[in-house]
Image: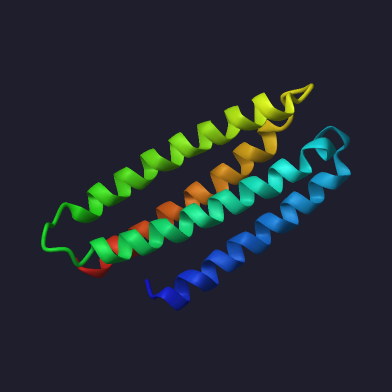
Length: 127
């Protein structure tokens, strides 16, 4: 997957997610967590970008397992950063309900599918 193609698809996924987050303004229990939803979106866009860069470089590494190792490292990092992000938000803002988890998991799910898609495309480049 070329850089241009990746950026185009990241843009499309992000536009879809922006539309979804914007629709959360119409759900009263989610309104207090709008800033958190936007921060989640930014987190996952950045993680996707860095995962693409690292994955596309590692595919040409002489070690055939470098791509798999890089993918696993970034997936583990994504989980750790996501949990840290949730804990920090919960500790700092002390939300009165757990509704903030709904937009988080929706965004997480969307970008997990997207990352699986583009990592599969990158992995097929050298095979």
